[in-house]
Length: 147
Image (cartoon, rainbow, N blue to C red):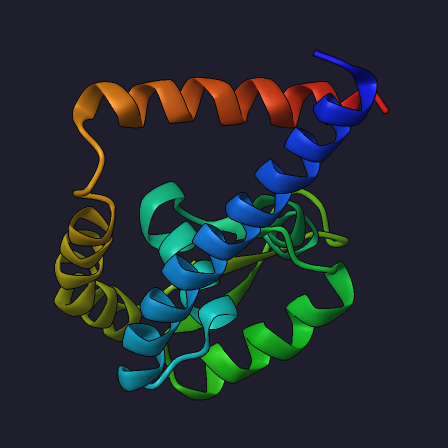
């Protein structure tokens, strides 16, 4: 394959990958907004539900959000009584975000449908194709970290 052909294939892959991500993300985002959250709020709540209490300083890195936006999102979720801030007993500089009972109830009520929706969106791929896609996208992501 020539450099020009390879370059065109790379560009085509980028476009196809971007469009697929956009289509999936818009569909999932619509479901999330129907349930009164924006995608970032949902991501924080889902993180706390699945991984437990998280230091506020580390949430952004785990959900791919700029750290300056975390305070705003946490404030919104706190006003909805879905999470609370908890001071670290060992280090006064650290504050944890902790899901509340109301937040846990909420995420438990919508997460199964969210999960099913994603499964339906991706059902066009076989299990083997999904595993291959996971492998290839991880390989791609890891290689870019080296740039």
